[in-house]
Length: 632
Image (cartoon, rainbow, N blue to C red; front, side, top):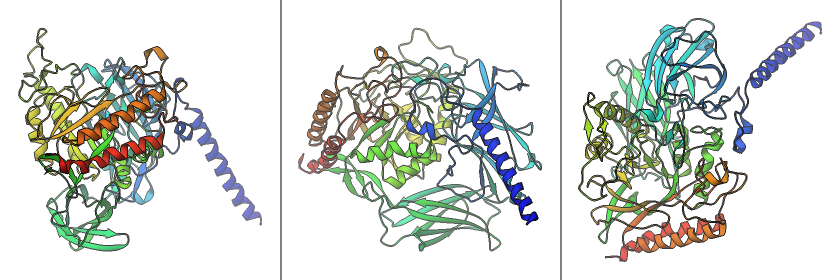
């Protein structure tokens, strides 16, 4: 009995010590500032921040989440690593956000340093170890145990390093240095600015997606490219390894539940063709996902395995009675959805929890929309996974370049001059009526553009690419579309949403506020009104700033007035469908900072309109695609 008492007391001591450590960690963090927050902010656990596996399309079992409280310091650009840190920051929330616990701006004359210790599980001893970052804005220099690992530029794409040779037994130290010019350089930054106003929002700097470690074999799968081919009845699965020449083959199994419905093999770097008899199709009404098991074979043995998923779906543009329309799985479809900025009052670019990340998608589907236009932002991988599993079509924007938001909307006609590109040693002309860029600006954009497309390629929810928006950083449009065609020939392209149209891409885009209206039209392209509405209604107690600074379209005074206009505009869209305008995007899902034109408030606590009325109006718009048969 005495021995048992000793063991119990030891257990209690360990438990008490652990509880004290957790309490001590929690005491080092609190939400910064006094702005509105979402209901999920109160659910933040600093010891278990965004614990879900961050990469659903390529899963392994052995991984370690590095989110949580890190040391941080903001120093003058070019300074050495600080000898003393300023305090704690909650990763992966940007330093400017309330949930970071810091809430401070990072200026282009400064750098942000992060540091934390970590230990590896004992069963990782014979494995290689990868360090993954979901996204860091903008340049990240990474060090492990004081040694430089490498760097990455670009704020929207994941990157990884093999840190095996730098690790030691016991505690290891991870250090990250971040520089973010935001809108002072012409880099992809979307709506981030140092001085927010109007539809330009608070800057996001540093780590804003999950940081994690993964134990992998020395020879391993590094990338998957999954293409559904409905017409051929197969999935085309290309797996690349860190050494394609050393592996014998890739084995692919397609599963429906526990049942294997197809098997295929290939050599690394080439597509395995997995045929599926009578495949179940993916759509908003029936978002069926197949599971995938991908094995890497060497000398007859499986040396690496990853799990993934895929959906059998086809997106195309067809001609019906003279009009171009979208087709999903060879059936015409009206794509209708909100402009979705993906911003949060407490986390800025980062949703507080995975439940919050899925919430906007779930509400959008409840309201009867079948599509989301993800506006000038790229989301974490789990956002696209939620769209895949819930059945939500996505138009994916490329974040526009900073410093180019005032690019001249020339004439919006079919043929006109694109933004000039200058050599790097040329000065920006002060008297030019065009906003111009340098070749290095183009290189930065192209690098991240390619990374975005390649990273998101395999998500079935994405059905349209949008390289440019409203002339914001629009340049070299024709060549950008040609590059995109080479990267992905399976999806339509909206070359310039509401911007200058150069007879390239597949969609002729119209923006008009507040009422949906067609300014240009051509039967050679699919015609869409991919921004309209923006009906502004302020809900007191749920706003970012004081009333006089808030705005929306229409000068509205009441929810009833805005709701009535929403229904009227839905009727206009139904009528326009009869003439071949067959897709629309309403602005927007939520209020964002001083914009009060969302269907929900920024804190997601109030839906402004009657949800039953929204759902019925949206249903009629989506079903108006049937009227296209009788147009011409």
